[in-house]
Amino acid sequence: MTQTLRQILCGVLLFQSGAFAANPSSVPTAYTTALYETSVGSNPAQAYFLVNVLRRAEAPKADLEAFRAGLLHGYAAQMTSAAPPPAAPKPAPGLWESLMRRLPGRAKPPTDNVAAVIARGRQHGDVMGPEFRTTWQTAINQAMTPRWGPGTSGAPVFTLELRDMQPVAPGIWAAPSAEGQVRLMLSLRLANTSSVPLPLYRPDIVLQGTLRFTCNWDRTRIRQSEMRANEVTLLQPGAESEPLACEAPPVPGYWREQLAALQATNGKAGLQTVIVPHELDSQLRLYHMELAFSHAAPQADSWSQRLMKARHEKYRQWSPAKTALEPPESGSLTVAPHHGWKATVTLLTTFLGATVLALGLFAGGRAARSAGVPEAVVAVVTVLLVGGAWVLTTMKLGGGGTGYDHPLFLGLALWVGYVGPMLLGVVALHALHKVLDDEDMEWWQAVATGWRRALNFTAKTSRAEFWGFLAHCAWLWALARVCLVPLDRWIGLVLLVPVVTLTVRRMLSMTVQQWFEMGLIVIGLLLLLLLGY
Image 1 (cartoon, one colour):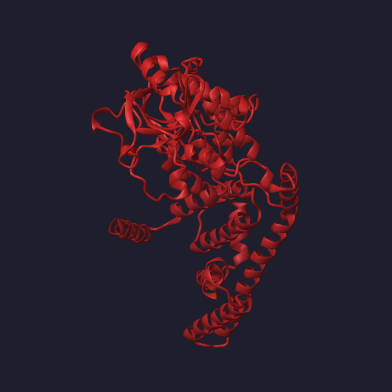
Image 2: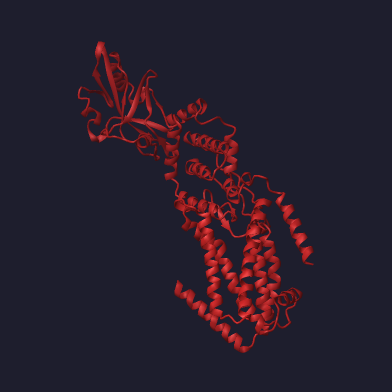
């Protein structure tokens, strides 16, 4: 029976391992699958923070660029009010569909999710290319309006340094230059007349299709870092930017009178102003635009926490949130991937080696007790043997290093993952065999009786049979959890049936005094929990 069961388990493990590629990193995780199925809603500006989430989740670079292109094309369409209406929400799924979506790999993506935006982005060119730059400039000019003049703050700040500048029209300043040319400067603000926040970096201003002005913020000059100098800010709907000071190279003197005449005759709108944005001039500035959008997204902190949990708990199951732009929701049921036979053999060797060492220490201690050695001496010698082996192993493996390579951290890892569980196993074996000796029962008899009565809820069960079979199931579960992923959950379900029946039989076999003692233990545990909180 045992041999047949072993063959079945190995066959299932071999079959399931074939479903995974030789390179596990190429297989999408549950978190990345839920990320691609996350709904982005109808506001690309709010969804733009997901570009950084994809980058941190180590998404393919092609997907990252396509997602950025899909969002920015939709965002440019919203600037000009030409964006298509958002898709009508789907009705709530029924009970059967909800259950099917929770199964691994069966989650149905919403209509407009990250994957759909990536698919749309693949149909467009690079956002740094000239085609999209033209689209972006057209959208910016339709969404932003220049407002001339310094407002109520008096003369522009740049006149404190350039004292020869004189106002010739609202927002237009001039000073004579060499050879009959004139030096022109503009003082203006940019107003957001659209319904979405607009990214703003120092633009160029082109007047009458001829005069090109390079703009900077009209503020006192201070030393700025490269990061600060490339900052992109978001201009909210209906708001005005900081004052801009725009300067052009010296031009013929007639422009001084001509611009003033245009202001007086045709009004401020007659200057034929074209805004030339520079948000997409470099990858660094594009990164600053991403930062500006991320500050406008309140979900960014929650995404960071979920991503960190997904990295630390790789076998946790994830599903997309029901609300747009919310981070994936975590679940408890999951099937962990098989990481190859080499890793499985290594884990089995380590686990079985720890088991053999624990059994050896227990057998030696049991033989010493039978020879009349006091129990305290056996306990001290066992601890010294385990501690000495732990120290020697740490010294051999940790020959120096700093940080997490320091021998102290290596020793802690060995204790938590190997030496500590082995020592607990030795103590548990001594306690178990003390119970077995009191009832004159062998361990193999307790195991055989537990499996034979796996479906029997009425037979009487002694303490020795209960604890002997429970220890056997605990060892099998630990072996499956450490070495037989992804079969650990299925093996746990198989072990759960005899454990439940064994517990029921033991509770029916307990006397009144034993019930009273167990009640006191439960009350004590509850008090400890309450005091802990």
